[in-house]
Amino acid sequence: MKKLIITFLSLMVLSSTAVFAEGIEVLPTMQSRTNAQDRVWVGTFQLVWNDFVNKVIHIPVRFREGTPVSVQELNKQTFTETDLSENCYYKKTGKITKRTRKQIAKAIKKKFNETSDLLDQIDWNPKQEKFLIYAMLKKDFEFLNEFEKLGKEPFGQGQEAEYFGISKNNKELSEGVEVLFYNSDNDFAVKLATKNQDEVYLYKNSSNKAFNYIWDDMWKKNSYFNGITKFKDNDELKVPNVKFSEEKMFDEVTNKRIMGTNLVIDKAMETIKFDMNNKGVELKSEAAMAIATCSLPSPEERIPRLFYFDDTFVIFLKETGKKNPYFALRVHDITKYQ
Image (cartoon, rainbow, N blue to C red; front, side, top):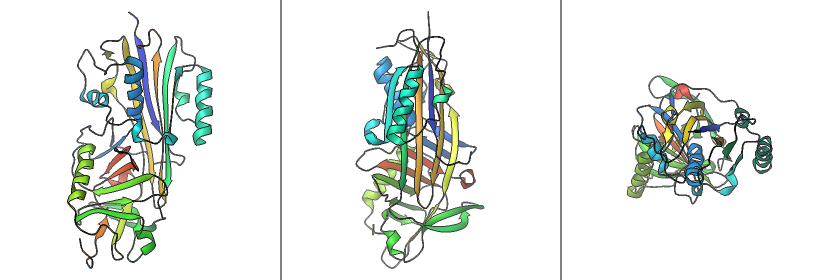
């Protein structure tokens, strides 16, 4: 019996060069659990998986050998394109031909003024007919105001980092910061405003639980907080620059036949590059699934609060009005990001 071979690729890149870090675990979903101290998730992998399930096989992915927890989580589709605005992503499904490649290149150039870093990894002259599911997600936004550069200061235990933020009595910059809660110097969260519809959440938290739990926990504490949510004149903010590049092969989903089909996932990969500094955030991602063609299944006023993200913390990115974040990062070992 013929097999339908699927190659799944996800690529995230920035226009600037990023630092390749070791030991940052790339997760397939917000619900994924890991013992890794530093970990990251982005929704690009999920977007293409959703199209594969909804538009190609029309059933959840299950394997005869047993379905990994990661695949079960992906099948739940807790992140979808409804969590993004239409102007920040592009998708295309079609046969793998040079014409399709040109159509994608033209479309992303027109919509994002971008070129692809993924398309060259695809064989556009396959020996057998194949189909492609492709998506690009692009985010490039500035904070409401450019924050101060604070220079190098300690991070964690014996580490050092470059910081940006707000020193005392800078009223102009404080307009771009909303306090979600401040329970102590090691338990607080803030939201940084941007010039568009993206929101940056920073939560100082050392929990090693899944991102979805930490996200819900942040909002639970926000609902209980009765203190001052305005960033006061004598408050301070200190956030480390975060810049990294990482990639991972999701071997747990490959080389297993999908029940109810004659499909086998040949390769599953994701690479991520991210850059956050005093000016804003840059993010660009691509994902693609190539499918071989045999049969395509149809605290209070006078007391200063020190918002120092100088130890383990989490970053979330979400669009205004959307329910779920599209990016999460746990920063523990700062040397992996600077």
